[in-house]
Length: 104
Ligand code: FES
Image 1: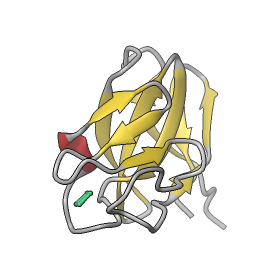
Image 2: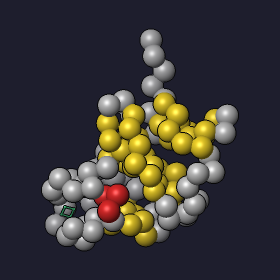
Image 3: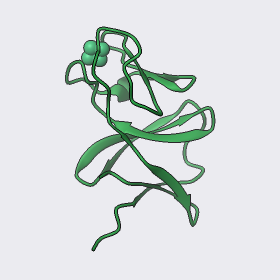
Image 4: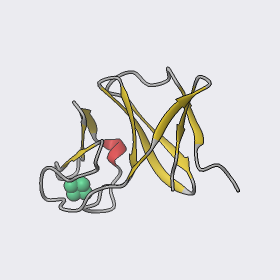
């Protein structure tokens, strides 16, 4: 059986406030550094098919630049309308100098 975690970045690759598109488990995800902690979330906004990579990280939230919704990076919860559905979140771990994401 294949281990679910996949290496997606070097541990020091992202500074706080930065994000990176990653692909793991056949999914397009974002790896985000929010205030020094790493989060993996769906790349696409839950409101419309628009990349959150075009938005920005503010504190521990990510903002969609199309209509201004915010999502909690830890829970994926939509915090500001018009989005009312959460985005997916995925476990992250650090091991052997790399960042690993479980996309299942
Ligand atoms: S597409 Fe993201 S808030 Fe509308």
